[in-house]
Length: 471
Image 1 (cartoon, one colour):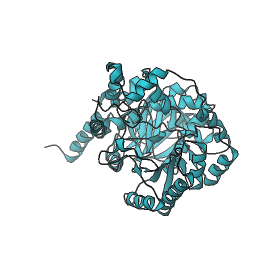
Image 2: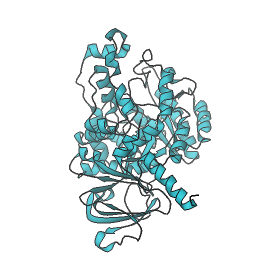
Image 3: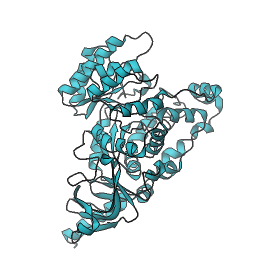
Image 4: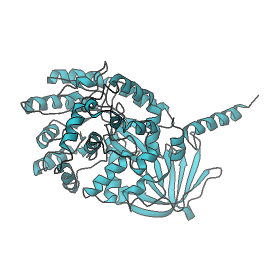
């Protein structure tokens, strides 16, 4: 009969094989030796030839290799010629969406090809794979910005799964508009028409202990902005009374200002209709609000509708293979059977439009408003995981430097997660969430995709093994 210790070792070995994971266990000590540590919190300053000691799920020591001893019995990861960063954070994702063409019938109705109920069940069943593509991409934490009540099950599943990022969550956004095509019994958004209704729904959501409340704030022609602002304020008051924050979807300048007046703590998209002004900047600074640009998500829809979506090299390597297999499914359908909006878009062709969202990013940063990298992953064309590299390239195209982009994806992402004491930098006492790269991240966004190891809570994952474990 095998001894208890032998059985435990066999069990840990089996878990490691399943999850592509090198180390588990609260008493496990790991030493990362010889790498160059990048400090986003210090302007991306470099600290060469560093040793990092991890004990359990936290960082125990960080220092020069020549003066930082490796504990006896520690697992040693040789990191010479590699770069070490805090784990990356995507500050805007949606687990109820997959990134494929069938995931948002309210925008691109392809339900005659794939019924929406089938897509939702697929997304639920596919959660373990979705978790892995985040880790394989160097992402150790994600903030889900709203979806059905089963979002709370996602957070629970992530906590139980060794191969999953940290997940912050909210339930159905309290909405100023209705999206009935996303309601198959557990609605992805819930429309309310009064502050009292907003307070009641907020109460129901707060009972589930969300990390924040979310408002989908859409102002259409003929809508009364002041009445909608009152709904946002009622939601924000309920969130703040419960000790949590208010996240708001508000993409127009006037709507974003109203959201800030009503108590928004996080603006989950860019202002995209016109240039921001001094009043917006003052409101955002006074609220100490965080700004999440989500620059690529519209491009994802456009590329899919035009039949021009092609995976980037990181997406081909790190995207969920099942989703990648579906990305060109629309091209297999006769034109007359394509969703009406797709047919209309293809007749219209590619159009050149001014990108206010791109032009607004630099002024927001320069005003001292925290910017957090977020993709809106799950929307059609924006894949969970490797879409971060498209997003960060657009941030660079919009004028941010690589040190600024790294700050947005680490320190500022930790603020969105509400975990700035534990995440965002590599220092003693912090959670051991790191990414080890084969190339210099300050030289190119592309180098951020060259992940050698992702370390989450002290557990070491190899991206190739994670991807091989996905079926």
